[in-house]
Length: 81
Length: 143
Image 1 (tube, rainbow over the protein chains, first blue to last red):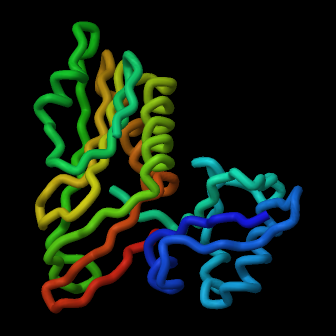
Image 2: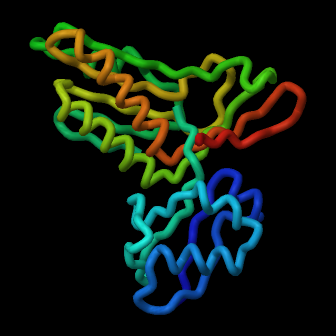
Image 3: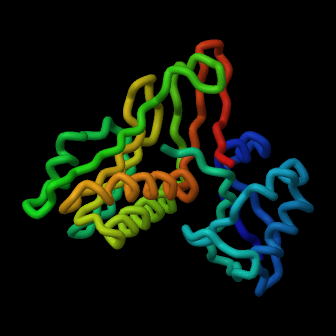
């Protein structure tokens, strides 16, 4: 399944786009997603250690499942306020 | 974008935050204390002179997280709570955030408001894109 991943802040600048797409197997988890992004977008590599993954507007854990219609976002350290 | 319940108000806005209106909304007959925190764009940051800040957000999630903060505040003693963040381009001294609570008494409110701000600083997906007088631009990302 193809998953669209929203990017924000400096991650957008690094990739040059507001979103990326990665291919995952059915039943994939957030950990699988991170692995796929690391492999396909090495420019994000080091940054992923400090980046959280949000699925359907909630911060996720590595074991959380991802489905084809999940809205996924990479959330670098926030700076609102 | 707005999210309201009877006793909480969470908003992302693109226009200046109307502090007087919000302060009035917070006021309740049984509340002797209304505490407001206003965050403004600072003129200097990281040793540079700031010209403006563009605030970007994952909007649906940011509103959801602001709502969680407001809920936290009412679950920990506030009678009413407001969490409003402005997005878009703000000049120096403009207000970017308003966090407010109303309570029967003031004492527990100060610490509670600080807890709310700490939550916002760590969980609400909003980022500063800071523009400097020297023409440079930098994403500010927390740690």
